[in-house]
Amino acid sequence: MRKIYLFAAIAFLASCNPRTDKSKTEAEKAPDPGQAKQESMTYPFTPDYSADFEIGDTKNAQTILNLYQNWDNNTLDNSKSSFAETDTMYFSDGTMFAGSRDSLFATANKIRGQMGTVVDSVHAWVPLRSKDKKEDWVLIWTREISTDAKGKKTAKELHELWRFDKDGKINLMYQYELQPPKMPSPKK
Image 1 (cartoon, rainbow, N blue to C red):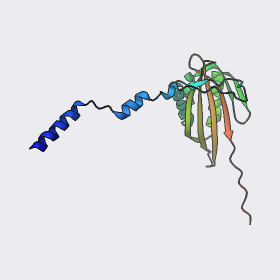
Image 2: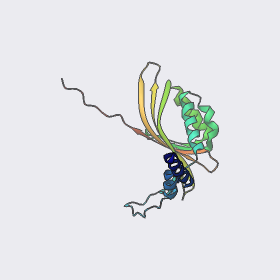
Image 3: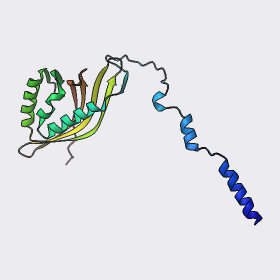
Image 4: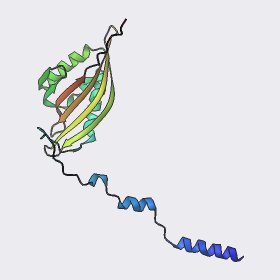
């Protein structure tokens, strides 16, 4: 009987001792990664544009992903309202477009109409905001596979940078393409 009283007394005292949740205490002590002090660095280059970025508005990423879906579905006009009145596009083949939104869409619809089926496999995207320039961007990496009417497939690895104006409209795009590796022919 004495053992039961001793056990009950120990249990009672233990329950009166406030326990701290170790993980909570450690989490409260840990600094917020977003508030981590940046080490002062001296870089060997000075950026022409900016080196002061933060994560941007996810709505801009949604706009670009919808644009890609409309490109794949050949319903590009569904994204027309996402573009500014005047746009500039630099393409990976060295061509450039600078002009009105209507001209851009007339040209883009013509090109897309000649492509057959298109399927994009989006690898990743990130919305960014240049803090010093106060400009919003979305960077996206994708594999675009198109199949023409004769069944010929063409694959492209693309990286694109899309800029948004102060009204949240796309007004600039840079496109870069990875050339497929040239494999040596097997020796006979």
